[in-house]
Image (cartoon, rainbow, N blue to C red; front, top):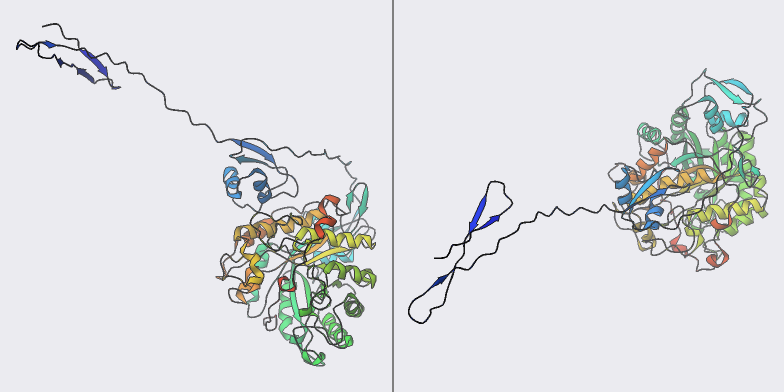
Amino acid sequence: MRPIKIAAVLAGLVCLMSLSIGFVAAQDSGNGDSAITPTLIPSITVTFTPLPTTTPTPVVEHLVRPGENLYRIALRYGTTITAIAQENGITNPALIRSGAVLRIPGVVATPTPIPVTPATLAPTPVPPPTVTYTVRPGDTLFRIAINNRTTVSQLVALNSIANSNVIYVGQTLRLPGDGQNVTTTVPVETAGTGVSTQGAGYGRGIEVYLAGQDMNTLVNDLQDLGVSWVKVRVDWRDYEAAKGEIDFSMLDNVVETLDANQFNILMTVSKAPDWARSSTAESGPPDDMADFDAFMDVLARQYAGRVDAYEIWDEPNLRREWNSSVYSISAKAYAEMLRGAYTTVKAADPQALVISAGLAPTGFNDGVNAVNDRVFLQGLYTEGLADMSDGVGTHPNGWANPPDSLCCAAPVGVETHYEDPSFYFLSTLNDYRRIMTENQDGSTALWVTKFGWGSSEDTAPPPDSMVYVTYTSLGEQGIYDARGFELGAELGFVGPMFLYNLNGCQVQADGAETCYYSLLGPNAAPRPAYNGVQELRQDAVTTPNITEPTPELLPTAEMQAVQPPTAESLPFDEPEATAEASS
């Protein structure tokens, strides 16, 4: 028999060898003998192949510029807010800071960079001379700033104050200059021109509902949020049930508590009692404006030195707030009310500020159900607005459009309420600013007396007229509300801003508008928007850098030539509630 070749097979184990010998039987030779012919098994060569190397996920870097947010950055790179947040360890997507470098995952090519014009460094200013002031009982930084023609921001910076809501009786403060020759806000400069804004400077505030609420709990939430202003609704009909019989007992504790905790107070006064109106449908003004003046006189004297500002009426460009058999919905009619109230309040409390009514943003303009707010504002200037207000009120609702977006391309996920400039937060602010400067009133602050974004994610579905709250998630609401505050600070012409609202879910059931916009959810737990606003208290106020609305921010004439919204789509339909106060 021929020798048999043994093939050694190495199976990848150091101490294990497998021997394999194979035979193949030859076919019968035909003579009955069978021969066994061995067939050799070829030797097997074992090659070790290293494991494949994982290709890292492509990542590009993005420099955050002023005005950007994660929503816009994610859209630009075709990724998601969550992906960017996870890649960069961001715990609060509402907070990113200008100048930060973000890693954008999953992007193969870097998008075309946006050219950045290098900033020209201004020379270091010489510190101005200062005088001192000793804090007295009842003082607030706002009051001190107004009385000495300076701003809260200037006082905070000059005195290294950590919390602008807390000062102490007997504390010595430094005031700029001689207290008589400084502007009331930090001048805003663009293209070599400066503008100072009269009245109160930028500040964060929020609207609260008081009926049936515990004041101590509300104060704790307000302090937790770090706001310096609080908006309180004063429905006239709840405090003067019969002519001349005015009772402010429900408001006294509210004002005393807020003032003692160093909050600045804005009262929005509206809704005439039935005895003062011949038309009692919906809400509206009195038949005789002298009745409203008499109420404002008692109110301003009652809270002189404690209430800082009064907003005269609420959205008088809508029928539901200005239903009257005597006065049409017009700038002329409302100007009569504002002029009388301005004179009355100033006589009762010269330091109190008078703010024109925040108008409902709407492109609807039939003169019966609504008047376009831009048209209405221009009409007020024709009637002399600049001489009868300390600030111009506005309600720049964004529906479901992000704060930085402009008319009129539908943002991702927004199916309705995007076709008109009135649906955009930034477009409304820019339009108002343009009208103000065109009427030589550029030194007056724009008061955002109501703004916010609603979400129905954790509540009952909304009616068809409010479908836009279904487009916004609770996470997006948190980003948009916080960004709205940031944007107001960056623009430079915005004074106090009041977010709508803190606790609407606690005064109305699920499915009510107040709840969609509330920072506290139906179970009273903070929504992401609460946390987003809370985080802002840790940020320094952005230095304003815009005085005029720039052309690229304003909607073009082509954009404006679109179908206006219907009256049914108007925002912020206030609930019919009991007196907005708690004892």
